[in-house]
Length: 258
Image (cartoon, rainbow, N blue to C red; front, side, top):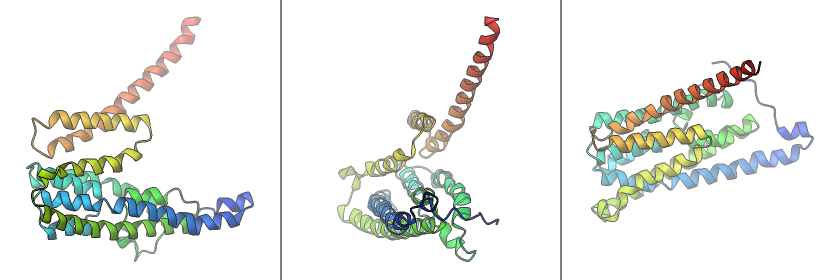
């Protein structure tokens, strides 16, 4: 794998103010990484409760968090199972949600430039949160710190709170009577909402929700989630058509004036 040229050691060096950047590298990055890791890691409790409520055993729930470790995919899997979906369909939906992490890995592998022996272990921590903390960092050192602190904090807390949530669900009994079946979509939306920054992303998410809700009464559980992925190519196609129409209109107007 080609090594990426190391980012400029710091923005502050160019601006003539290196001490402030050093403080940001060592203190602010760790603080931000811990903030993300703790905030998201605690939501593992909701997954533990939801997973146990969907019929998975304590061992199955904990193994999912240990080995899969991508919240959206885990919630999608247990949500489809809880709705009575086919296990293969549920697994397929979870798989497609997790594919995005492979694309994150392509960028992070160049940015972090970790030793080959470490990469397989680091790959397990390539998720939305570690990517969000790592990419904005001004130096490779800061990127490695952000990735490591976020990944470690989130992995430990997610698995601990998954265990606590699963144990708590067993003590509570029937989780449906507590309304905890809403925990999965609520946490998923909380993780997704901050990532929708552009109009295209918001429209795509909205169309996906409408597709899933519209197909839910007529298709087996898990299938509507898979088909909602069609929202992305549909929105991109319509967006491209709109740009083409605007270009043609702008080209025709000067000709009409002549």
